[in-house]
Image (tube, rainbow, N blue to C red; front, side):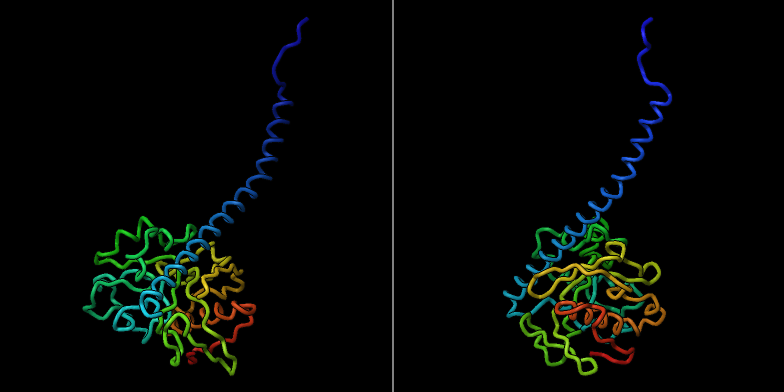
Length: 266
């Protein structure tokens, strides 16, 4: 009597169980590889931005792009310590004094000279993306990117504002040399102020020598805290602290950076 071909129910269940087990093992690996790939793309973006900043400085007597004139359009901050804004629209935002001109700001000052505009957007940005923001440039709407850029206004008074003369900040007798130019934007406010790259777990920091380093965002040390948005006057100090932590990371552990008080400005 000929034996019937095919699988028994038990054999099919065994095969299904093996496939499910393999899928369970492979999916976390694939997810981790995908996250690592996006982190690498982000670091490459910042490295290209660093090269563009150096090229800009080379053709502008050593100076880096700064914010708009007057120094900052917001009522709540006398100076722009840092921004992820690329383009200032026609003043639709109620926080803007009116009128003010349409103009580039922050890293937007490089856009006209940049071929690959995607470098201003991290592939893991939870809030802003290339297709959404780039069409706003030149319009009455504000446009934002993925990276927090250090405005010249944040530099200490003695700094010349040139790439090789960015000065240092002194906090409680500890001198921290200005090294960080840009980093992943992480803002923990409620929408529309909430934004994270890499789910807020890891941060890429661009230093002025064009190197890009990855740091764990332990205790949200590289994020603008949610409570700062309860009182917008606290945001400049929060950003200053974030920048000082990034500066300190060039030579030491970010968590060991000196801490600012709310009333202290570097």
